[in-house]
Structure formats: structure tokens, C-alpha cells
Image (cartoon, rainbow, N blue to C red; front, top):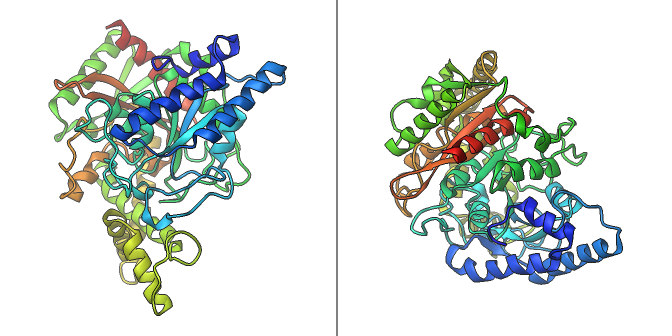
Length: 478
């Protein structure tokens, strides 16, 4: 069963060839067996998951089940999403003892689709990181090669799917935190348009950038899980009331009538040779397939990393001010309120979170707000304008997901700037609010996966998935 796609598992359940209970037990057993080595999950509740599976089986047996394409399929949620009655830690000591009192929008969607939530996955603390080395619960290991990082911050969710601990998972993507782990772990990861999936119940890092996104083994599963997760949520003021297409129905159209833009700024120095070769070979294959390729320019690309880390850290500084030892989570007793604040935050936050809070507070401070934050917002508008101009010439934009394959543990922890540059190809789409997908397109000489990224127009995930599906089939042909 570990080799089956999510839709194949659902088909077996619908046909009566296996039960939801048997399926849940199988994947929970894999979690129990593999998690000590991979550390993809922070928590999992076997009792609750099995009770949910039994409930679905009873509904199926009685004929009262509302069958969906993912009925009975196990799913994992990143541990910055609320599941009522279960811990939400954000991989941070500061949320020690916190239990969710409500379900996130994504939790409600998963339950409505008949899925079984099997656990909460590990992450970089408060989703801040590109390697999943910043968790208070220890690093996640890449199932392809456990000496390598899985990418961050949603490394636990990506590793869970890559190791067949769950056929589907959700992560959050602020600057690339779904797409980068997908690339490093050799699976498909999607960041939808800002507002496509509800952020209600997602613990905020940078509110204008955060988006929940799914992981799957292939594009067809991705189309099904996106359809299940997308849609308007009145609890989320940033949720957009747009119709949700039948994404799977249009996959067979592939890249017919779609133009792919190749941005010259994304193919300069700094890309490892195996990555460049894989992307060049992919582009050659698309050309041989008759796909129309267009040369485009995104001139503000060189500013994206700087702009992203100014805006994201400024918003993080504001969002994380709520963790003070008063309302919930960790509290370190002290003689005064201010001392309690300081002691709690010193003990509760990890080094990377502290670094980003301090940077964010600095760029928002008097005398620097105009010089940094306000200017960053103006450049963000120019980045959006660049994409608007590019999409007059093309329908999708292709680039590497990352300039490298998965790197070794500790390789970049002493050089934050080098770590931040892991996101050089992924931060632009969030700044513009655009959807983007990463899918595997080859292996480096060490057998590590290489990811290719497609970026689409706002709320045009349909074309994005069509492009991904075409590339999958083209690569499968060899």
C-alpha cells in the first residue's frame, strides 16, 4: 500500500477491497516504525485516527457516506495548523502544553472530504527556516538520504509523503516552504494563490505571505487534494470567494495552447551544474514536444530575497509579540511582568526565531521604517508589476525550484545568508501572491532529487497543474 497513490487508495476503499480502518492502521504503523529515524512527526494520536477511520467505515457500510475522490485517505498536517483537542507546538518550546481549542479551516476541509488525519508534522520553529534544522523537537531527515536535510520549513510534511508515512500532507509556504521541501524530497508541492486556501487556524508567521499548500506523489493526486482544500472561508478575511474548478478534469489538456516563459534572470550564476543540466534537458524536451517557449525578463529578481526578508521578518516581529507567557504556552516565573516576558521569550524561542524577531523589529523601528519597510513595500509592487508584464507574453514561468539539491546537516547553519539564498527562486511568487508548483525533474549524480518550478497567473492553478502533468508524462516517456 505504501506505493499506492492517494486516489488508488480511495478507489480500493470505495470498491470494498480494503477498509478505512485497515488503511489508517497501515500508515500509523509505518509512522511508528519510521518516525524514530526520520522524525517527520511531532505528534500522532492513534486512538483518534482509528476512531475516525471506524466512523468512516460505518458510514460506508450503512450507505450514508458522502464518497469523495479522497474518502478514507490518510493525511498529515504541519504542526502550525489547529486540530481541536490535539497539541499545536509550531516546533517551539514557547507553546509547551498548548492544545488547540478549534479546528483550522484546512482541518475542516480534510474532514469534509472524508480524510483521516494521522498526525502533526515537524517543521522549522514557527515555519522559519529552509532546512528543518530549527525545530525544538530535532531536525527532520530526508528519506532519500538521511544525512541530508529535507528542506524547510515544511520538511516534516514532505518527508512524511516521500517516506510513505502518509499519501498526502499539508504544509505552509511563506517564501518557499512547500516547494523547497518538495524539490529536496522528490515529490510534488504546490503553493496556491494567496486566498485560495483558508488560513484560518494557521499560526501566523508573515500574514501577507503565508499560504497553506499540499504535498502529493504526483500531479493527479495534487489536483484532487487542491480541489478538496480550496474554497472561500468566512472565518478568514483574506480568503477569496472564487469558484473552485475541477482541476483533475483538465489535466489531459497538458500544455496545449499554453506558452512557457523562461526568465533570463533565473539562469545566471550560482546554480549547481546538475540542477542546470536537468533544467536545460527539460527545456529541450519541451521544445521537442512543440511547446512554445518564450524568453522573458523579471528585472526585480535581484531584489526579491532582500525584500522578502524585510517584509517577512517585520510581520513576524508583530505576529510573535503575542507569545509572552501570559495567554498560553510556556511561562517562566519572575519578579515582575517585564522580567517574566523576557525570561519566557528567552527560554521559549530558538536562535533563528530570535534573529528574525530582532531583524523585523529593527526595520519597523523609528528612523528605519521609511528606509527599509516602506521602501520594501514599494519594491514589492514593482515585483508584482514585473510578473504582470511577463504574463502578457506567456502563461506559465519555468525555473529551478532551488539552485542546489539537498545539502548536508550543519552545512549552512553558521551562514544565515547562504541559508536564506536557498529560497532565491521561490520568494518572488509569494511576494506577488501567485501560485507555484514544484515537481521532480531528475536526479543529481548522488541520487538526490532535482526540482523544477512553474509559476502561474493569480488564481490560475488549473494551467499550473496542466503544465505539471505534461512535464510528468514527458519525463516518464524518457
